[in-house]
Image: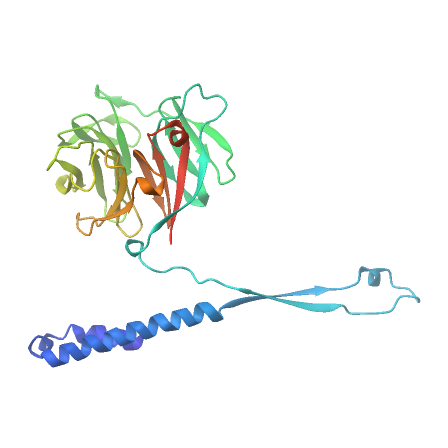
Length: 318
């Protein structure tokens, strides 16, 4: 670690700009140190074991009499291979489907229309089922609860489509605009006009930025816009994603966007660069609608056939 830190410090030396041979030598040294670090991690993964000790004894010694032989029992040693956690950045890992959870409950009269989803700590999942007019909470044990509360917006006549919570306020998306709404309700403040419907929004809680997905498939139209300090920046245009729907931000600031018409999910940096395709229809997801990220886990809903509409798909970064 100290060697790598020293190399990193040396790479910032301004005199290095005029020293081509020194730059190449430093680069080669850095490469060797990184490879050495990777080899060390692999060795640690092989040799890392957890050990447990357990004392076993004959319960007859609890009823000791003259006919019972005295024994102190035995010590059992159990060793198990311990897997080190994956510390690679989420932008360098791939998604793997782990399971599907059936969100349709006996009281539902229709197939679900899961237009919103939030993944919480402990594997809890909240979904908004538009078809059955329910907000459902599922625990990690697949237990089901229905929850509901209302926030009134004064003097507001537009349809509320997408919503996110940011800096003690809600940001709401409508057919044509983005609004700020106090957390306990009240007057809405218009933040930005948009060219199409905003079905989903997401907040980067670290820096207070809000990302809004704009539902459109028109070439060169804005697909994702970013709000920060009452200013907006268009960070993604229609291209690799079309029919922009669900959107979320992970702990590292990466943004995830569902392409409903393009049947894919992308990951990009907060400024719209470094875009990569994470999932396509070949991964078992069609018409992805909503997405939520917690840690290294991801949940996605679909607007496709009933076989997908009634399920939340769980993924994990590997």
